[in-house]
Each structure stands twice: as structure tokens, then as C-alpha cells.
Amino acid sequence: MKMLPFFVIIPLGAAFLISLLGKKIRKSGDILANICTLSLLGLSLYSISLVHIHKVLVYKVGGWGWVPGIGSIGICMVLDGLTSLMLVTVNVVSLLVTIYSINYMQKFTDKVKFYTLFMLMLAGMNGIIITGDLFNLFVFLEIASIASYALVAFGTEAEELEASFKYAIMGSVASSFILLGIALVYSYTSTLNMADISLVLSQKGSGPLVNFIAVLFLVGFGLKAALVPFHAWLPDAHPSAPAPISAMLSGVLIKTLGIYAIMRIFFNVIGIATTSILSIVMLLGALSMLAGVILALSQWDFKRLLAYHSISQVGYIMLGIGLGTPLGILGGLFHLFNHSVFKSLLFLGSGALDYTLHTRDLRQMGGLRERMPVTANTNLVASMSIAGIPPFNGFWSKLLIILACVQSHIQSGKMIYMIYAICAITGSILTLASFMKVQKYAFFGKLNEKWQEIKEVPALMQLSMVILAAICVVSSLLLIPLFKPFLQNAVEALLLGTGYKDAVFSAAK
Amino acid sequence: MSEYILCFTLFCIGLYCVLRKRNIIKIIIGLGIVEYAVNLFFVLIGYRLHGRAPILAKDQAITNMVDPIPQALVLTSIVIGLAVTALIVALAIRIYEKYGTFDITKIRRLRG
Image (cartoon, rainbow over all chains, first blue to last red; front, side, top):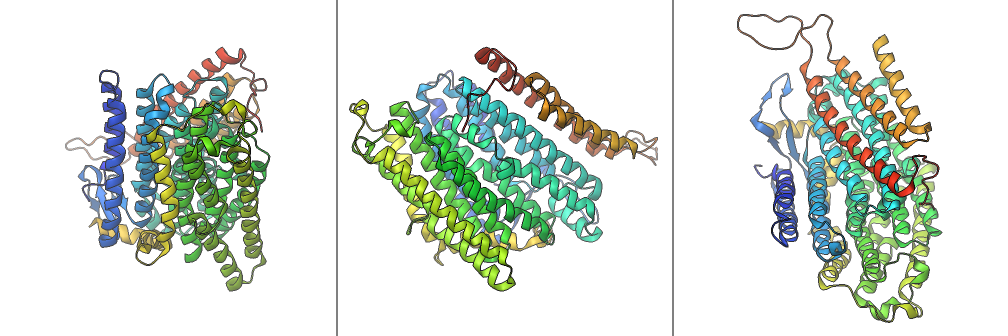
């Protein structure tokens, strides 16, 4: 229980130390950043066993207690199954990304500032996941967002600045919507603690105001998650960032800022009773799924193509979560984990190509398999995962989501679920087509004469790509009974619905 | 009630400014208006008519006080707004250096 604040303290402290020492001692930035992410990964893996024993853990920041009848006075941090799943996802990706950055970021002039911003973004993301307080969530969300606006513009080229400006404007408008929602929640319930809000809402009952709040949150967090009507910033912002940051943004940032917050607020705080909201979530998910992949088909810029696929894959996750059945949520959460692994691998691979070739245009590549075998093979694994080819992890999670759609169709008899299932299958086939294009143009075929002299990327970059590829293969095993509790605890945390408040209250005593 | 409606109007003006204006400096100003509208709304929620500051002193009974929590929250949110605005203005200056214009319709190198 005492370890919960360390998820925020470690990266914040690391950001401070790196900016202090980075300029004075050579390599200290690399070393500190890697130690920080490694210890965070260790802590988050340890949190799985804690969740297994205690189910829910609460840490009261500053030792402020709970007053019966009034609720909590201070901010609290909550660890449950969903939290630990998200923490593991974020910290696995961030560790491998920091290992990758040691070599990749060499070409940029100011590595120290990069690591500082990176650590701030990590602190923000871990904070969002672990906090149990609505305004605290907003503050961490802004920390992560501001750091990511700056990181997108890190190269300070014309395109990067333009993308960052667009992203910053959209992100700030989204934050304003979220803050307005929080203000209305506070005016209605006079508390900001999530468990307390849930308690008050269950006593007062929901009215039109609660629906209005739900819509505000859906717009705000939907903008952060780049669901389809709000997706315009993502295909500009994600490719413009340096490759490690693209991997972080597409891999975990849109999930923590968008999907996790939507899940936590709609399932655990407002309560699943507002099924109309869930059907909107599903509709947006299905739209994102198709629109993202169709837009991706015509792209020739490798990273831009990947960014459009992020929109599409987020659609899958939202569809799974929105179904609200145990199988659907399991599929959605499993796809969330899988997507962050294979999408970061794909972005790191595109970064490796950029590192050696200095271009992202697929038409100029070709036959790179002979020269860069490690990049080509890891990229092949990731492509097969995202396209849903067995036995890779992407196949199992997509299968679960489609099965859950069919199951809901059989149970409720509504045709719409069947249409969603067909959309999911279509999206998967189009994803396969798009990644066959990538493989054909980039890695197979004849070697372009320009690239006769190129070499494979440095060993540390290879290492992180190989580890991610290994996770792609191994994480299929998360579904077997021995490892299932990791996902199952998260599913139970969501299925608990507004029972979340009772769990938190009993853990806080 | 009228003050809430005015807040909402301010919010809409800011949003219109962000969405419709072509000059990026005006967009940034619009963003500021949106933020202030939300902050103003947040402060008004905690306000009581003829309320006083919630400071506990010895042998004083306070009957009517304003809610201090929204004020503390708004202070945080103003600081966040400051950081965002500073960052975006810095971006705008760099954009002007690269493109030589503030017109959003001419800043279009990304497409697809």
C-alpha cells in the first residue's frame, strides 16, 4: 500500500534529476531514465501479486482520513485489477522505449530535455491510472498532455511544429470540456473522490444533468482517444514525433488518457446503467474501426499509415468495452494490451528504417530484408499480430471481440451486434491488406540500389524490438488459466460497476 | 441563473473563435476565452450570496461562507492554462519563423 505513490514519485524525481545532472555528467540521462523505467516495471509487476491477494488497495495521500457521512477529505490512490493491467502495459512499453532511445535520440541535439519531458509524460500517465480522484486525474492528464505537445514538436521542423500546434489546440479544447464536466460533477455531488461521487449519484439518482456530464466526458476523453469524429489531430501528431515518442503516443498515451478514463468514469463512477452511452461508444468504435483502416490503405508514408491504424485499433478496443459483457470486456482489454505492444513495435521499426534510410516513404524502400534482417523479422511479427494472424496475440483478442459481438447478438437478438461483428471482420481483412502492402514494398522484393551500403541498426535498438516481438508471441498465453488472473482481475474491476465504491470504502477503512 | 447563461455564452464565443478564425494568434486567444469561461463557471459554483471567506477563527461562528474547494481547483487550472498558453505561443512563434505567416490556411504542409 505504501508503494502506490511511487508510481508518480519515481518518474517525477527522475525528471528533476535528469534535468539537473544530465548536462554535467555524460550518459547520466540515459542511465537514470533506464533505471527509472526498469524500477517502475518491477513495481507494476509486483502490483499484480498485490491485486491478487488484496483485490483493492487504497493509499490516502497526506494521511487525510475518511469521515463517516462526509466521505474522503483528501486525495486517495486506488490500486485494483484494471489499474495494475494498465500500469504493466504503460511501463513495459516505456522501458523498451527508453532502451531504444539511447541510440535513436543520438541524432537530436538535446537528449537531456527529451528524457525530462519523457519522464514528465510518464509521471502523468501513471498518475492518471493510479489516482482515485477526479480533479487529480485532470491534473495528471494535463501534465501528460503538455509534455506530449512539446515532445511532438521536438524536432522543431516545419511539419512537426504544425502538427504539434494542431494537437495542442485540439487537446486543450478537450481538456476544457473535461474540466467543465468536472465542475458540473462537483456542483451536483459536492465531492471529487470517484468512490464518493458514485455513492452520491446512486443516492440522488441520475437526471438529465448526469447525461449531459457523460456527454461532456465522452467528447473530452474521446478527443484524447482519437475516436472517429475527433480523430483529425492523430495522423499528423503521431508521425511527426520522434519514433520512440510515436511509439509511446500511439502505444499507451491515447489509451491511458482516452480509453482508461472513459472506462473508469462510465463503468465505475457514473455506472453502467446508462446503456445509451455504451451504445454510442460502440457506434463510435465501429466507425473508427472502418474509417481508420480505409484511410490507412492509401498512405505511402510508413508512420502515417501506422497512425491511421491506431485509430482503427482503438475502435476495436472501444467496441469490445462498449459491449459490456464479460467476454467483450476481456477481448477489449486484451486487445488494449496487445495493441500497445505491437503498435509500439511497429513504430520502433519504422524509426529503425528512418534511422538508417532517412526516409519514411514506402515507395523508396524495397528488399530491406537482406540488409536489415532483425528489423524486417520483428516487423513481420508485428504486422501479423496487428492483422490478426494466428498464433500471434492480435488474433486472439480480435477473435474474442468478434465472438462477444456474436454472443450479444444471440442473447439480445438485435441485428446491430451482427453488423458490428461484420465490421470488425472487414476491418481486420483491410488491415491485413494494408500490412501486406507494407511488407511487400519495404522488406520483400528487389533491393533498391541506393541502399546497398546500409547496415542494421545498433544493438540496443535491436534488443528492444526483439523483446517486443517476443512479447507479441508470448502474450497469447495470457489467456491460459495460469496467467488469466492478470486479465480477469481487470475485467472483474470493470464488471463490478458501481460496486467499485463499496470495494474502495472497505479497503480504505 | 443569468450568470451561468453568460458563462455558457462566453464558452461558445471562445469555441467559435477557435473553430472559425484563421489567424493562429486569434485561435490562441479563443482558447484562453474558453479556459476562462470554464474557470469562471467553476468559481461561481462555490459562491454564496453575501458569503464570507471560510477562515476559522476563535469564538466566531460562521453561518454563510463560500466554498473554498472550487477556488483552490481554479487556481490549479489557471496555472495549467498558463503553461499551455505559453507552450502554444512558443509554437506559434516558431511556426512564424518557418512559414512566414500566421494564416492557418497557408500552414498546410501535412496532408493525407
